[in-house]
Length: 517
Length: 101
Image (cartoon, rainbow over all chains, first blue to last red; front, side):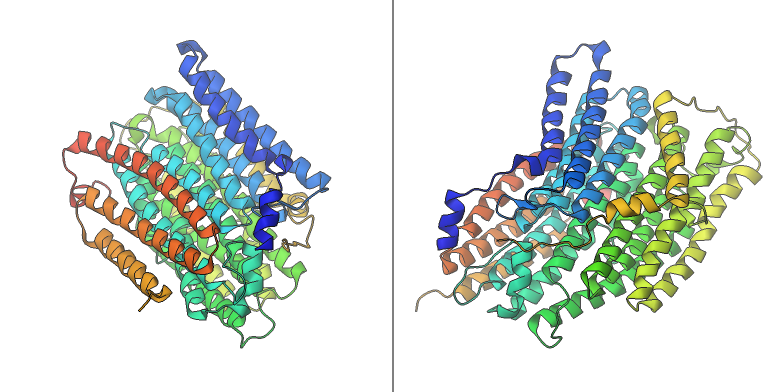
C-alpha cells in the first residue's frame, strides 16, 4: 500500500527520457494539420517535415545514449533507457526515412494522399519506439497497438485495389487475434506474479524478481506461453507465419518494405526485453524461474530452426517476387531468433549484451538490404503493382543496368555474401550462438543459407541470362529513390566492411541494469 | 458459498476459448471481429478479477487501456471491412482469396 501511495505522490515524470517518442508523436500531429490546410502544391511539406522529425528523433536518442546521465528509467519504470532501446530506435529511424524516400515516387504515381501516409508512418514509428523503450507490459501493449493500427491502414492504403483490401483485412484479423493472445498472457502474468503480501505486477524487472515467489506457477507458465504465441505472430515465426506471404504480397510495395523491416524489428525488441529480462536465466534450475526459463528457451530454439527451414524451403517455389521476399523475411526472422536464443542462454551480463547487440545489428543489416531490394521492386512493379512476377524480370540486366546491378547486390547481401552487410550480420549472430553452445542451431542456419542461395541466385540469373520476349520500358529513376538506393548501397558495404563502429555504438553500455523500483 | 477467484478465471478462460474457436471457424468477417472483441473482454474479466482479489487498482487501469485500444481497433477494423465490402459486395472470408494462402 505504501508503494502505491508513493507512486501517487511522485509520478516520476521525465520528458527527456521520452524525447524521441515525443518528437515523432508531435510531428505526426503537425503533419496531419499541415495536410489539412496545405494547398495542392505544398504537399511535399509533409514528407520534408517527417524526415526532419525522424532525424531529430535519431539525434535525440544518440544524445540520450552519449550523455548517459540522469535516470535510466522514468514514469515508475514504465520507460527504460539502455542499449537495447537505443540501438532499436536507430533502426526504426533508418527504416522510416528509407520508407518515406521509397514511397515518394509511388505516392505520385498512384495519386494517393501523401500527408495521410506520412502521418500514419510517423505514428507507427512512435509505436515502434515505445515498444523498444517499454519497461512495463502495459507500454509494450500500447506501443504494439499504436504500431499495428497504423500499419493496418497502411496495408490497405490503395483503397480501390482488391489485393490491398484483402491484405489489410487479413493483417487486421490476424494481428488483433495475436494481440488478444498477448493481452491474455499479460493478464495471467499479472495474476501469477502476486505474492502472499504484494499484488501482481506488470513491470518486467519486477516480474523477474517475483518468479520464485509466485502463488500460482502454472498460471505463470500459461502466461509466458500466451506471450510467446502473441509475439510469435507479430514477428512471423513458424508456425505462426501463415499470414505473412498474403499480407506482404497484397500490401503496396513500399508498405511491404516497411512491414518487413520495421514492425518486425520492433517485435524483436519487445520480445527480447520481455523474455530475456522478464524470465531470465536462473541460478537454480529446479526452481519455478529455472523451469520457466528452460521451457521458453527450448521452445524458441525449435521455433528458430523451424522458421529458418520453412521460410527458405517455401521461398524456392514462389513465382512472385514480393511473395518470395516475404518468405525470405520469415527466414531472416529465424536467423535473428538464433541470436535471441543465445541471449536467453547467456549466463553473464557481458555475453548477454553481446548477443542482444548481435540481434540488433542483424536486424539493422536486414533492414538496409531489404529496403534496398524493395525500392527496386517498387520501381519495376510500376503503378498498381502490375509487374511483380519473376517473368517480369526476364533479361532486364543489360536493359536497366543500374536497377539490375543494385538488386543483385541486395540479393547477394540477403544471401550472405562476404564483404556485404548480410554476411557480417550472420557471422555476428552465429558466433554468439556457438559461444552459448547452440552448435546444432548454427548448423541448421548455415544449411539454410545454402538452400536460400537457390532462390536469390535464380532471380539474378533471370535478370541477366534469360531472353526477354515482351517489350521493356525502363522505369525512370526518381531522385528520392536514387537517394534511398545510394543510402542502402553505402549501408550494405559500410556494415559489411566496417561493422566495428556500429557494433560499438550498439553495445556501448554492456551492463544493462533494469533493477528499478 | 462466496465466489472464488478461480470461478472468474474459469469463466474468462471459457470466454476466451469461445472467441478463439469463433475466429477460427466463422466465415463472416463481422462475426470474426466480434469473436476478437469477445477475446479482449475475456481478458478484461481476468484483469478485473485479479485486481479485485488483490485489492490492487493497477489491473483495473489496464482494463481502461484495453477498452480504449479496442475502440480504436474497432474504428479501423470496421473501416477496412467497409472498404472491402464496397469493392466486392461480400463479407465471406472464403471469397477473399485473390492472394492464395
